[in-house]
Amino acid sequence: SIFDITRLIKGNFRHPTQIVVRAWQFVMRDLLAKKILKLWIVSGLALMKHVGLRPLAFDEGRVFFKTYNGLEFLYVPQFDGGLLSIEFGGLWEQRELQLLLQHTPQNGVSFDIGASFGWFSLSLASARHATVYSFEPNRDAYAALCANITRNKLTHLVKPQRIAVGDKNGRVYLAKVDYFGSFVSRSVTGAADVEKVTMITIDSFRKKYAMGKVDSIKC
Image (spheres, rainbow, N blue to C red):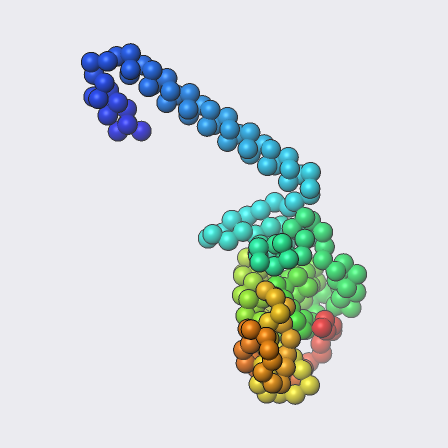
């Protein structure tokens, strides 16, 4: 900076050789840093291409990666090394996704029960312009789901619901088994992380919102 240069000259006014040497060191250090940075970037891009890692995007301290179907998903280090390896470009559970796409018409309606981070919900909304009601009671998975919906600008199509779906309406215990994994129990279990959540039936949810036909249900 200008401040550093001024200080260097003033501090070594009677030692011009020192000024020249220090100036040369500053220049070389800057050039070397640029070369190292360039090498690091080139090597990183080559490695990403070699392993098939998809492009990354950064948003307010969060990292999203783009999959082959054009959607972007939040990278979660705590979950299975990132996010089910779809950060390497694969399509997660492709057969199940294709089956859902076959049975969900354009502008249709779908229920995604156990939506997790939103892979099926966002894929259906994007490919079929379907309205998807995404049920996910796990707080961490629900947070990732909402982040992914917002990131992909699909808030008008994907409707997240932080509730469980079951055979009765009421309150149940949700026990976490890992970062996104959880199971419902009607009593307190030995799991370390347990919380109470609302559970509804599909029929009561449809009745509450006066819904008509539901084209597909993933559970």
